[in-house]
Length: 392
Image (cartoon, rainbow, N blue to C red; front, side):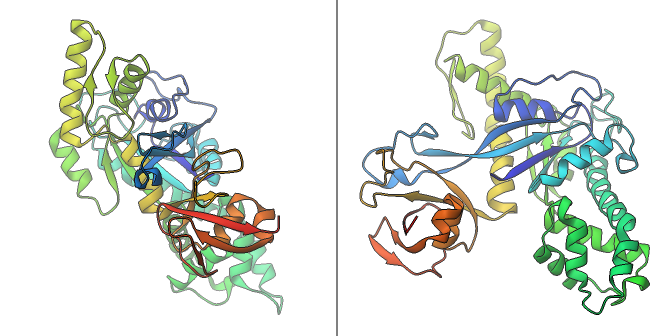
């Protein structure tokens, strides 16, 4: 399962985002370091279910009238403060937990209502752009420190005739989630001395910057968009990276209201309707939230999750089935599983995603829409329904 980590300074709304996205109750409060131990939960990205191409909806527990929700792991860790890579605050714990993340959502207080330490201040008195910069900077400095601490080992290994810099760096960075292919791609993007002994701090820092972009892409959730000064949102949206205005509190309120049958709302909808009996105060709050949702085409929480997986990580959703005509598994469940694969994945990749034994015994695959066999080099597309034939 892919993992998305929520990063940001204390009190920016990470825990509220986490609770809204996972509906797992966590402690949140108006003071720094409310989160000490990391929270792990399951969130869902949303895509169009293939059942929309059939006469009836599939009825799967994660399909809501053709809106398919695919699970990902969501990680909420201790708040980040400047100097975290040096151990300030709970920084070391934060950075260690981040190693397993495939993507990072930097939850930023777009309202500028908290300072660099996460302490409440007047709305608009702190520049949220600084939050974006320091989250990225802390990750880069952390990586550079990892390289620096292990460089003597790499220098010793370089004296061997069989030395390979890609392999040596991959060994060092495995714990960070970097593969040898990642390291090779990053080295191709920079100029560096062939002899590791000749490397300087600037060389390692440049490699750390490229590694961060390659292995920990960051999407900015411009949170508290409902109270943020317009200028702040405009400046954040002008950044040269993915930015999504969000209101985590609004999303949490909507999910609670939907669970209480007060509103008709599915996560990611760009509007909702009040369907239950509500008090005057509740109606006023919901109508105010409606204005925010319409202005930003949703609360942004689902959009941020979707863009982190489908855009930043460039994933597609594929659905393996056993019965190619009914699109079911052996028990008759329609479209039982959804797998997030890298764009360009093949039927064999899907087979391995289902189970290593299925992949090892892979024979061929059938496109369930057309009923035709597809080649091993066929590139799957979003929403493909595939029957895998395997000896396993």
